[in-house]
Length: 340
Image (cartoon, rainbow, N blue to C red; front, side, top):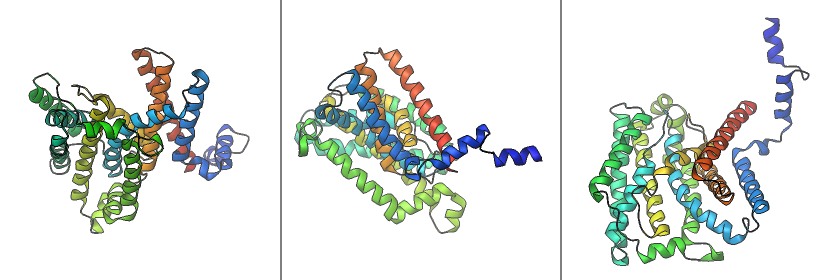
């Protein structure tokens, strides 16, 4: 009993006591995951500038933001899904984004006349896949991990069936201009659109009933249902939104590359989850928001760019990227314990 009390009390001279004392001395704002992620992005840019002069130049930062926006759009839906709780996660976003990009580009075929139809059709298909995800999770009670993993395979099969293994199609000039052109302050339209989307999504989450319902469901589904929240509808809507934003991210990627590939966005599923967690959203749901996820997307993009600048081969970049992510996630987990 005495030993237990002593551990809880943790005198300043003990290791645990010093850690907790240090945690109490850190100003509360500095414990914010959003602020920490932002400082990390700045630090990585500073390191890149020291290693390769010009890495922190304005044109290079604009380019980083352009590339980060693709992951940022996909992370919108991933944030919503994770906030919904119930071990919510969407592993299919990468394949859904690729499928949407292929549908959009093959419908556009480099023509502005077909741009609206191509984008609408791609988003409709993406929403359909998200709806199937939500229905399977809610009514068939399949765990999100298994359901979305299965949907990843379904989307891959649809890609092969639709393309017969040959990816063709070109982005409409208007889409290319939106992504690669320069508008205000030399920023491309896709970055400005991402900023607007960040504000809109944040307001929807924090200032509207659907947003409040999402947080309530993520915090405690039983309590939310007893309070009159339509839990099933909220969860299904979260997965539909995830697929829609994944499709949107894939379409913007086509505007960047101008042509499509069979694996265009396949590798963005795990980074979208990492961006959400780095931004401070709890995997258990109910706590977090999209601003942090957006900054998390920037952090991951800067890290990838820095590793590329260091001329690391793909295998080494993958290893370093994975190690850094593990360290970051472990740090955040420790930070939450200190805050509690």
